[in-house]
Amino acid sequence: MFVTFEGPEGSGKSSQIVLLASFLQENGFTVVRTREPGGTPIGNEIRACVHNVANTAMTPVAEMLLYSASRAQHVGELIRPSLTAGKIVLCDRFADSTIAYQGYGRGLDLAQLHQVTQIATGGLQPDLTFLLDIDVEVGLARRTGGGLEMNRLDLETVQFHQRVRDGYHRLAATDPFRWVIVDGERPLPIIQKELQTELVTRLKQKIST
Ligand code: TMP
Image (cartoon, rainbow, N blue to C red; front, side):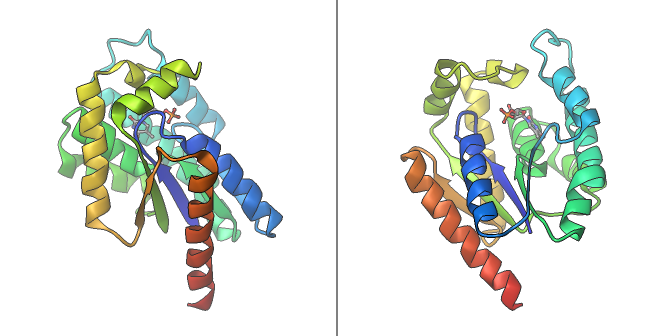
């Protein structure tokens, strides 16, 4: 099963994924925990480049292609082989991030982005996507206050991040079965319980079909 986690900056995805992976492992599942950009040695090199705050000259199209290149490598080297081996893949961001950030955020053409995404993923779609939803200003304050790694996109305006959040809601509305919107402003253990319950339900559904 392929599960992705999306959301605006500071939505708490990473902490939730760590806890969810432990929960699944304790229950006998083999889990791969990964992220984008990154997840492979080549992807990590791309991550360093695309997030480098010194790369102010990077064009939106170059940015989008770098995220997509990282994704193509990730799908080919890690995600597809893991799914074929029957593992549960928990991925912090995937193709929906490109639509939300480079599409709704930067304003790149959505139809073209879907085409590039199709090439990068080879058509692979998550079985389940959690949208950890959070007020943009609350999320950005969490990031700057939490001493977390800052990247080029963290430096964008509040309006940019608001467009990204709105974009996520539009995406979620197009496929309400795949997307589960989770209120990310609640305490961490409550959110974790909700993720566990939803995932267990989906795993049972998958086993029974
Ligand atoms: P994170 O690992 O802290 O979530 O940071 C990833 C950053 O990269 C975040 O600002 C969102 C951005 N991003 C895109 O803009 N497009 C993409 O396709 C992906 C995967 C991430």
